[in-house]
Length: 343
Ligand SMILES: [Mn+2]
Image (cartoon, rainbow, N blue to C red; front, side):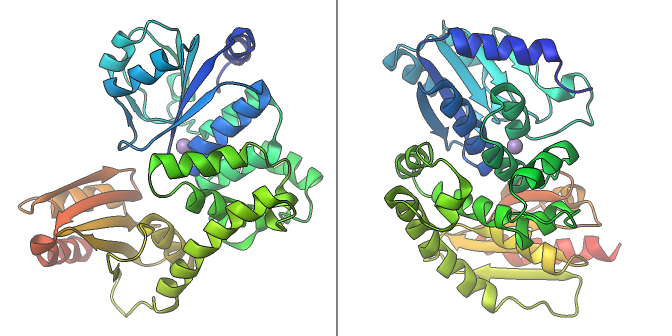
């Protein structure tokens, strides 16, 4: 079962009745698309992108006071610290689709509380609330690797040129359609510092349709597209040389001068080489920052075993994880992964 109609109405009512809502959202396209939809619907409020390891910590409570917010909305952030909730005296609504946590002093909207298998993205629920920018909702969902039948049907009807109905798999939507291009523009726009990211998110709030962005029809669309292009050129450059060998493990590493894009690289490489076990790494300050992906082997247990005895940490979903390993232990880590893959 999904979020109930009552919950959606209740959320919408709280948003309608607030005068100064503050939105904290995760720094990925799903989080950002959730914010954009609700902000554009409300036409008011303040957005704060949370670049703190997908965690809303006590320090963010200060922002609620500074803005004199009368409603706090948390979007797509997997962890909200109880300390944050205890510090904030304003009402807090938390809309998310990650594994539910026990928290007090918050109104929690998470489809998994009704059905643990229902992990439809936050952008999808934001759309149920705002029923406005369908293209933004679709971008957020596809970026989170989900192609939902009802949304897809509505989307194709409205934008037949942006996605073909023959597209059935989320990764095809992400890498073979214009929606995927929108998701990439979004993903690259919110890289860098929170301050930089918010500059671009603000511009996004003024973009009214997908064509404006895809065809760079306005100065604001141009502004966003230019930054995307800069990252995309770097990305294509790394991608150009990425060819797998015979082994099941496909390891790609690149240098620290390049931007953080291991997540994007590992996703597209998995789409291209679905039989491979992928590790994309970027070296920085004596550490390897890794994204791990597989389509058919659970990544998380393999990662957990390979982490034993090396300096580093990591975690994530069954088939997609992130990890940080000290460079000195990287070879040892890779050896351990290979050993696990042979089992
Ligand atoms: Mn999400």
